Length: 597
Ligand code: GLU
Image 1 (tube, rainbow, N blue to C red):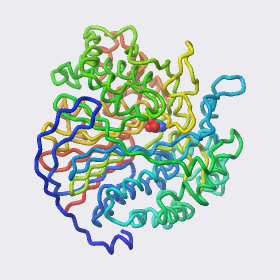
Image 2: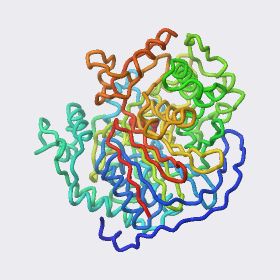
Image 3: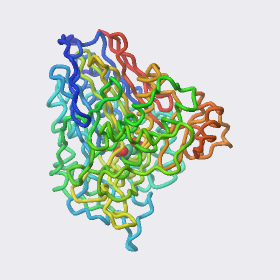
Image 4: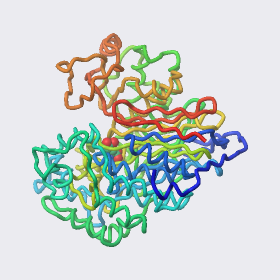
């Protein structure tokens, strides 16, 4: 418990709200759910126990869900630097119970003003080797997560901005115990280039020795991080102007593969605030971030193709249920891959992608007896075929405060440890590798997600808030996992809406990622030697798919790759009979913290 927050009164004020019939807006437009009445408790679910506890501490001190989000992000950047942090970007979806507005805050990074379409092409005109592009200065965009939180805090903060950062300052000074997952990733990335950066070398390796990555249980302090937070306490834009901005520029401009980010690029950075992208699934309303994330439109397109089908009649133990999920995913991903980019730069046919008649026509393509031979995007625009690659880093957390303010936020430095470069105690992002490296496809058509100056790269992050038929909160959901985020997240919606599962059971459904004709799925009891993709293997899991169902899917013609474990990090808060119920993904290290009044 921090000094500052102990001084604040731990008071929850229950908000009372009138009930209101939900509107029936068109897909793609913001939908207005009824006002919730406030809850008897508050809740935080985040990917690391220190982060969940920091959020809970802020809630106990009378902070709002946004205050708690600032605390959670600041602690995550310290204890889970492989996934997100001060140097990264994020999308936050928020429901305001007083106005019924659903907002999408966009803290996505931007490309430098000098960036060209050939940012990730070598002198031969061919794309750079993927990891070379990641581990470079070219991959770093102007960071947006902190500025975005500053914007959300000025809208919805109740505590002082500086106080919300205090738990992280104190933890950085006192030191934290390195988690198994962080230790594992330091050891794995240490074998590549993490060690090449002088700051990262001193921080992540004992005595700077490459052979000695800090291990699980190591107590790591981070005075530089505390100092950075102190600067941010004084100015939420401290990373975008002044000495920290200069330090970011200097680091991004180091060789090899120096970047071109300038102070002017950082000073020009602005977070955005849009109406959330909302559509319906059966009687539920789903709200998420609009482009430049493809997560919201992608998840909602997958679900839209399932809507005409009776999924509740074909549960998680049936071949037909998963066959339908797979086919809807293949079709949804095809549209998402082709059409989504930054809507400030390219025409993204979001409304057309979520049009109910269009989605019914996609659904009608699904043959219950056989997998389709090919999965092509619908004719919705002029964008060329997409070549974007994405690797999984990232963190998802969700918070509901006792007044009913709801936050669902996904946050990322992109690859594990971002660009592998460290400054001010935090990692620089490599978010710009989320652009398509090839600006045009084989037919010369420009890709929607090509690099353009000042543009935000396409994301897959899909933080969702789902509202029940009466307009109250049904549940929040979202996950890390690169482009698998769409599949992970859609699975939880089907699990909870169609199959009546609890948040935890929905999270523990097998992950099934069907994209580009292939189906990668978690298989139950798979011995290590039978794992088709050992590099994806996580801890042995008991909740994979039954072999008999996998056999049934193969008999329908699906090309199945068996995965021993996916790295989803699904975090959910549901409202069940007036009580908040959380779920945390056992594939990562997340915890649920409930704060009772
Ligand atoms: N950078 C990716 C995105 O914004 C996320 C990567 C991940 O989830 O691991 O979609």
